[in-house]
Length: 443
Image (cartoon, rainbow, N blue to C red; front, side, top):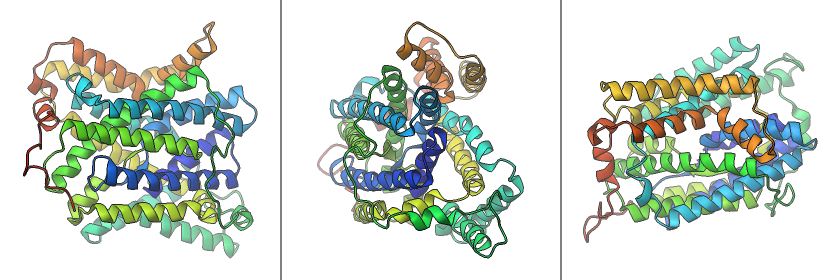
């Protein structure tokens, strides 16, 4: 979950040109907001043991809109104000969608195959981030990846859930010691900037709109709203999976939809506090499955810890100061896991069907090819808002793949089994898990 906060903060900061101190502040704002989101979700939302995190599904939009912001606005904080406005509107719409039981309306339209394609393309579409962060330091990047593999495969089950975090700590410690003793100099991929850490404040209290009052650009708003739908659908899958791992009945669709509403509410609070969008932290599902710990109270404690971490300003700068080559190597692993998460959903459908072969294959390749073309050949229109929206939408892999897959999946005839909808519809039926004895709450 902390890795997600670092990702959102660093990607936005690097893209729009925030200072190291500002990136640290952003990471702190995100952690604080994620703590609030976790407490709200497990106590008043879907009421399952699932921790919230800064969503990876929005990272492509941050990249695209951040780049547009740099070209339009000279001051990075101005771009943050427009990003904040777009995040705020999208979050409010997600909250309205969830609390109005919106899942009931779309559960027969958006199949697991489409959701899986979107999630897989989030991971595949972020390879430029990995490439930019590692840069010329691939030798060091591979070394960090070996640390991840060692932590994942050489130790116990619980160590697997902490493999990425442990690899970052060990690699960061080596880089910090090397810099402190003069073995690593400025310009080296592993150099640690101690100056920004020393100059940062120990405590950074939350405040309303720390980047300034939100500003609104219709293009930004349209482009940021779509990832909210994608992450809401990903969260739906997480809710069902964590209920299964917790050995409780799948909640009825109304409660699942309420969970989405709480995510929108939490993201609204995050936007007000200067953070980013949040959603269910998918890796948490694996932790519950492997550890057998399915306690909502543990999640509440984790939420409180995130609140404390969020106001510890210097820690945010420390996290933001992790050498980019280390983050790039860890992201390579994390994004790869994200791709596999999407593929598992895709496999719910009949992949031996020629119908699905066409949909899956063309969606994945179109999501890689068209954005690459659009980045070199942006569209020019007479409307600034439309121009921003089209260029961001068509240059974002998950948006292109998701839209194409959704259209084909609903236009080309296919059975429920072929679309992977049989078990899916059963899981989110209005009466699923209802009844006097059916709802055994996770403790």
